[in-house]
Image (cartoon, rainbow, N blue to C red; front, top):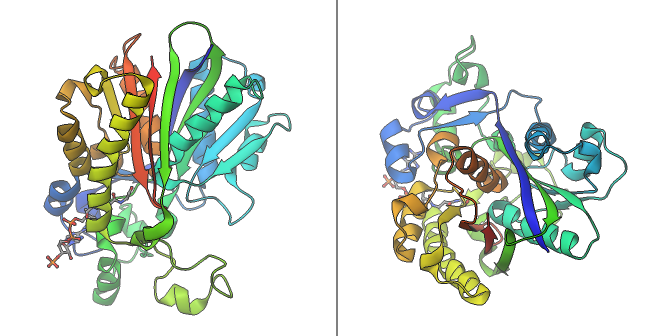
Length: 350
Ligand code: UT7
């Protein structure tokens, strides 16, 4: 018996924002963003739409795709680093929004590796028979992190353009803000007979270098945990040493793909489709080259969505399935690395 993915789905924020639109708010350009990251556009939600709302949309699509009654879901695992509230987490909010019985709902926060960690938890829940039908959601509303206030201007509505001072402030964070988008992806998992299903996992964590990507304020290492001083200094916005994260990703991701393949009894060359966390197309390209995989064995879509953290892998899986790129019996490998740092890989027989 193996844990199978029986349905997938995703939604994005409702506002499509192209690179050149961001140049209205800060000193950046389409050429810079494309060259450094491969990103061409991303989506942002309208103010008031929260991560659990996007999670709901993705969950409904995955449930419909699975062809099950939503009442069959008996466990929710929700991965996000941008929860609606400091507490409670999004899992319980989603249980309520879906109108489910009082089933268990677990929140996990492994950032860009959240979906892979979530898959391992779901696999354990299903194979231990703790749960029969699990809903796994990866969802993010990153727009709350953005330093600007000129949303109407960005969305092409009537509203003030940034002043020179505001543009300078927005530009201070441009290395990070241009990368992220709002979206959610979901999968439904169930036990099934036969060859297909999750085959193996290899996960790692190392908190020693967490300051290379973290949010300085808004946590209980500070008293009070939110303050006007921190807000004015922009310490509620993620800080990132982009070069350090890039180097870590291109080392750790191929390494952990080799580990999961080796421990599960496969050669890397047997991978039919690699779905890597979509943080930067240049990272994905280095990982692909390092693993020696041909273009037809890799699926990337960051060009259209940006980095949606816990949502990138389920979105890519849904698009790859619907584009016919996940053939019956194919060996699919998921890999990711993100803040924490957490990284890992999983193998799936489609
Ligand atoms: O899921 C994990 C999340 N994070 C990541 O995966 C991030 C990994 N790192 C990266 O993707 C890259 O490091 C970035 C795309 C973030 C940055 O690319 P980079 O090649 O490392 O650029 P840099 O930060 O070294 O900046 C190079 C130049 C700087 O200007 P000067 O000092 O050379 O004059 C920056 O100020 O590019 C400038 N710059 C920008 N220019 C226009 C930084 N961001 C921008 C921008 N537009 N958005």
